[in-house]
Length: 479
Ligand code: GLN
Image (cartoon, rainbow, N blue to C red; front, side, top):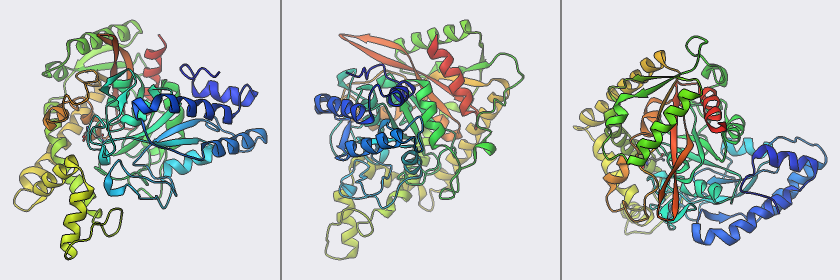
């Protein structure tokens, strides 16, 4: 029996090398767990039928010492909006229910080279729009810590797969919090890299100026291992940048003294914050002080506008990115009376309510007469938010906030009120607006009835300082 609960990538790697167990044994252990647990959790939309074949390949590589990396034979799960050649990638939408990817996303190509085993594709909010996976066209994902609650979203399936020990790690995408929020709800580490640090080639675009692919893991070290493998510039994504130019790994930090951590004073004024979240955040601050970090207050004066800016720019980018799903080139086609009718019928049938809502809003925001009032104005404020962070990072190295204003909520609790769901994103969207790296790490629990609901601490750093986040996160985690 392999103890999957406490397994890390490095431990698994060592066991595979020493022959304690094989990649087939390990993959089998995860498949067993999926079989017994996933009917209640629904983390996966599909478990691949060739998992054991992939594992046998890994075992061959390990036996012949052929291109063995720390990820060779490591079973991971992949969010359903990341393309794996020949496999279905549906973005949890009826629109792409039977769409087979024609190429590998760059991150997949890199992980294949590293020898990773892909267990399956995970559930998500349709086209990554949402924060609970309730917008999936294929049913909700349940939180392994409390089955009545959401696992978060939009990458809820990836989070639940790792938290339920149905994958050792997973990939998700984060446009406004979709890695960090589910990580926080499920008690995991979830990392959103600096915009451009990871190629977006082969991830279905939601908000192209926001999207980043990142890892879910049970430890900071595991998340960093995955990040190191997937990061880097890519000729197929002109917004990706080389680690050098991002200064990845370099703590540009202020002087060499102790790392300085800032708490934005605007955060404390956020309405509707759960008391347990606030108390836990204060505990985290005390812990960081004890670890020797210098804590000080910083100001991000435009932070209160981030939700309004995000939910103006995102529908605009969504409406443009969703235009390609016209029923002709990809996925679902519903025949109408004429070509225009084809479009109407295909989109009407293929898209769920949240996607439609954003297309309609975004089209309005981008229409002549409103473009300046909404889209342009929001972009101007986005620049102000960026400038706020730039200024703050001249004073501190890292900024911390809670990841979410509340722990995982009940399934059905917020789905009928989109605004309530949008408010959940208050702490996560600023990092995407500013393009900076951010990580959510487990910071404690809120006991509710028989459940212990995980809480998360979010750490943010200046663009390119991804490694600094791992350093502080690992320090926090180890003590
Ligand atoms: N909850 C946010 C939204 O609905 C974030 C989604 C994401 O990061 N993909 O837009």
